Length: 72
Image (cartoon, rainbow, N blue to C red; front, side, top):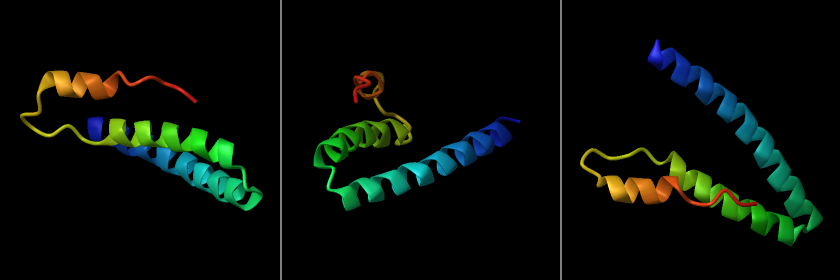
């Protein structure tokens, strides 16, 4: 049932990302540069964490990426 759980979690994430995209678009319309910069940093960290781990990747490289600060 692992695959079913992954699909359910993906669907939740996709729905929330759609909401985040609408918010980013609205912030652009408002010219909210500071808020967009804050979101950019968080989204870059999230994108790094969401990248699948390749076979043979060194454990310390993976650990460094997983331990990035949770800022915002």
